[in-house]
Amino acid sequence: MTTALPRAARVATWTYFTLNGFAVGLWVVHIPNVERATGISHSALGGLLLVLGGAAFLGMQVAGPLADRFGQRKLLPAAGVLLGVALFFPGLANSWWTLGLALLCLGFGNGTIDVAMNSHAVVVERAYPRPIMASFHAMWSIGGAAAAVVGAATLGAAVPTAVTLSACGVFTIVVSLLAARFLIDAGTEGPEEEAASAPAAKPSTKLVWLLGAIAFAMMLAEGVANDWAALHAEGVLGTTTSTAAFAYGSFAVAMTVGRFATDRVSALVGPVAIVRYGAALAAFGLLLVVVSPWVWLAFGGWALFGLGLSGSVPQLFTAAGNLDKRSSGALMARVVGLGYVGLLAGPALIGGLAHWIPLNVAFLVPVALCLLGVVFANVLSPRPAAAEDSVPSPGR
Image (cartoon, rainbow, N blue to C red; front, side, top):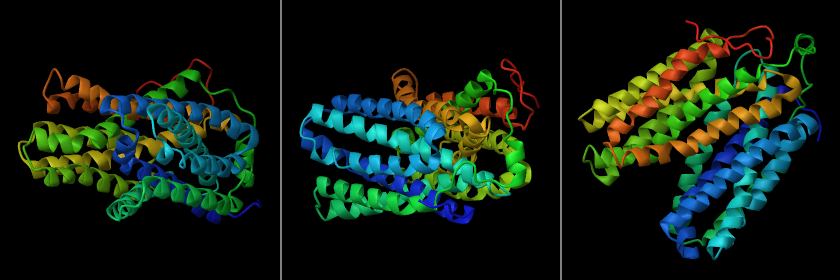
């Protein structure tokens, strides 16, 4: 691999984000086929998906220190190859335990590449005079949308799941290796950045965990939309299944558009404003869903919810990766990992509450969590290195 210019590195990082979104999306659309092929129940599948989530969290925690030790430029293509190899296994599973092993590998590979590509995105962003992190996350969404189209086509043509996922695995491996030569090292910075990277005080542990807590809250809210938007439209508002699909669609489209716009807005107003006002907009949008008796007004609420959430998580990941360049990967792994736990916990939490209270009332929980982002957004303010136990107050 040879060192490339930041612009080429940016395109390469876009490629990895798109590739990861495509791989995950293609697995998701084939879950029903895999369930039938293995003969397991819905409850057993739910347990095995927790294995996938746990393995992903483990992969994140392993990838962080590896990125700091060997560099993102080496780790990212290796993680892409690992994910590609893991994609072969779910389509070949024929029992609960073989699927469990397959999801263990798939989760670990996905967690590894998640931290590796976000960590490299921070490195690339340092070489730019303006924020670019949110656009990487937008490309992940584009990859997921492409997977939905390809998955629908292959399923409609009755292509075996093993063939589709294996072909995606080969594609992931090849593209990961081809894009590797355009990645850059963490030390590829200008004179001003090099001066700024002089040894500094260790970042506050409490500050890291606070960033992780906000990521947990924001991604928990995102997970609620992923799994419950359509069910709310159908079960609470009484719309048809086909119309209910627009609930999640409006959220997903607004989030993707918002991510493409966030970088330029962040360059003007800063990350604190993006998180604070974005979280406030998300809370308002979801509150609109809670109280709306009309389907299309609720769809508008989901769109505002997605637009508000779109820029928050990229700002948190950037902040974590820049707390200490010497341990950027490990710090990011904590924040990304906590956010991922929130993404998994959100649907389960709402499902549990829905047994006791109406579904729209249960949505008040993510509304409250979004308000935490409003209160604590000031944690993203640029500040001198602080003592170990100092934590910024919520501020104004």
